[in-house]
View (cartoon, rainbow, N blue to C red):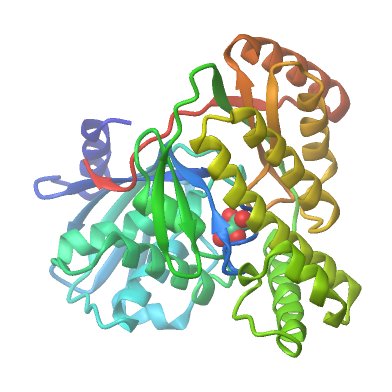
Length: 389
Ligand code: GLA
């Protein structure tokens, strides 16, 4: 999608594109550190080069108009600044509306409405953060359109998360919005979600590629299962706080966890907390290994991450387990795991250059045979965070 195409469509939908401005915010893939971001742990995502594009223009009145080139049947969705407080309506515009609502809540007053047009090229239901990219896109365009110069990209990520939690009812952590807002070409972000301190780590794998495999399944009730995991971790933390002084599960080493784990009454909550603690340590170690050029060990830690997400955290599903098992069998696959929230979506794998063809062929064929539909493969290009076009 080029800026010209975006502006052309904008003009077609809203008339005279004179002062429209264009922005882009990417999706993300997380390399390791899954379901740790709402537990005060570490994550290691990178921004993709696919994402959401937007063109926008201020209006004189209070109207808000939304149009998505991905949902053309919906046409122009009309709303008004005064209607936002009544909550979500069940269509895609809930995401940008939630962000506008959060701006107001935080004291960034939006004095007049806008016409907004978007196009997204993140495959839907893939778990590569199309909603976070739309939130960050909206945050950036509001900052630029209404002149909130003091607003940082980190705060835009936080606004996106807040709106997702409080307007759209999904209790996600900060990872997706942070990666979309703060991504950097050819780097992954090693983020401590407790302090929001971060470091860019170059991802230059000389002899390997990062490959995303889309299972093309998304099981229902994902949001409620996600919220349930989160509250199980909170229950576990409360039990642990009776016997040791911790603010988050991310504060614990594996040894400390084993020492205090029996304080967690419910065995399922104990299992969830175990994943959060071990996965955080795995993410810390994995980044260290990558920095020392030990991609093989990074890959092994990815595999261990998958096993823990499958068995302890129980957010995988048959199709995704099949994809990882097929991948693990191929020589030249250094690591493969589920990525993102789970219950479908994608795996992320590190595959030696020479094996990429075989990987796609072998995994692709066997997957289609067993599941009945094709998987999709994308060789990852790590892009920059949200920016004006
Ligand atoms: C989803 C959420 C993130 C994170 C991941 C799991 O993508 O939006 O905040 O919790 O799941 O790591």
